[in-house]
Amino acid sequence: MPNTTKTGIFEYAPAPESRSVVDLKPSYGLFIGGEFVDGSAGSFKTVNPATEEVLAEVAMGDEADVDRAVAAARKAYDEVWSRLPGTERAKYIFRIARIIQERARELAVLESLDNGKPIRESRDVDIPLAAAHFFYYAGWADKLPHANLGPDPRPLGVAGQVIPWNFPLLMLAWKVAPALACGNTVVLKPAETTPLSALLFAEICQQADLPPGVVNIVTGAGATGAAVVAHPGVGKVAFTGSTEVGRLIAKQVAGTAKKVTLELGGKAANLVFADAPLEQAVEGIVDGIFFNQGHVCCAGSRLLVQESVAEEVVERLRERMKTLRVGDPLDKNTDIGAINSAEQLARIRTLSEAGEAEGAERWSPPCELPERGFFFAPTIFTGVSQAHRIAREEIFGPVLSVLTFRTPAEAVEKANNTAYGLSAGVWTDKGSRILWLAQRMRAGVVWANTFNRFDPASPFGGYKESGYGREGGRHGLEAYLDV
Ligand code: NAD
Image (cartoon, rainbow, N blue to C red; front, side):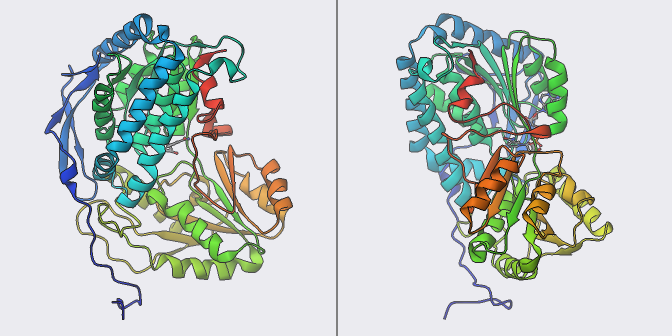
């Protein structure tokens, strides 16, 4: 007989991944011109959100540092990278992809330590997908004239890239791989709570013998990001993060010649029709909102379920949620790890309290949260109306708002009733209904009978306040080329 707890749920023996594969240094400098150098503005601490332990001190880059990094990137662009034939650039990018694969375990453990995400996800999703992006764009580097973007597409120069903390290495890969394939050089600023995998990536660039200055990493906070965006030597700005900061950036670059892509927030609808295979749909709902603690721009954070099956779906969902294991991100059994920071935890709590105050019904399965670290139990709200804050604002946490609909037209109406437009999901047995809905949904990605599936060959990006431009696939090349 397997061990079960009082609630009838399986008890698992801990299966912790070893941290010994990661060689953490006490402090890290900036990566400029192929070397680690000191920053000029002091340092900040990056912590493990599951334990609140300080992992390392990281240099705080300022305007002068950004200036040095852009100069190094420009030099590498003029003297080396833009002159290399695509076949040669491809070899470096391919080599980076191979090294990511070789060092996958180390990267996965580091990502889970710094971000709080379950090792199962960093190991099986983040790191393999990051490698896949480099492989994919290595393949494009010598085929740019055949990408249907004109006969002679040219690189833009130095790309300034600013990324968020939810998928640190993967967001880096989305940005760096196409930029390099197209012949640009890069100054990248990782998020302040998750700089470590980008710094390990800098080591990987050294290991791959990437010419100095082709990739530069400047760590720091918002002001460092703003300095990257504002630098006159940057020809392309690529930003992934909140809509709020995206707006600031759009204003900042207005009237300049900089090309911009903005990948911002989301509040995706996950539509479940009465004819859907409900057991699979429940798995998709769970994956849609609890994957990566719900720190996912395209998370299915609004469940829209057809009224005739709403009770059954919610009941099944509750049963499934009772089996989710919350805790140590390095334990291979863990489904939901730590919330990335105290600030993010406070935001999730505030919005959840607003949900209750506005009259929605809150439910979480019984689960013990670790005493230290930033944790939040998986939560659903029923009785949610479209006017509630939890139906409109991005919570960016493991919190699902459940709404209902009667007809397909009403489903579309409600799904599109949001300021965002990044993604959506549809669960139904009817192919014709999937096509009908996909044509009407204002969302960059529509998943059918699945959710949160990513592929480097598939473009990703938003409508409305979710931003503009596409990353991934052939479309992702256009953002880094003068066509
Ligand atoms: P954020 O906007 O606070 O920060 C993102 C990055 O921007 C960080 O590196 C930050 O230091 C930097 N930054 C902050 N202020 C800046 C400024 N004024 N100028 C330039 N850079 C600045 O977002 P976050 O909290 O790190 O990330 C969560 C957000 O990212 C969510 O809204 C989520 O939906 C979004 N996101 C979107 C996508 C997508 O592809 N659309 C993917 C992942 C995350």
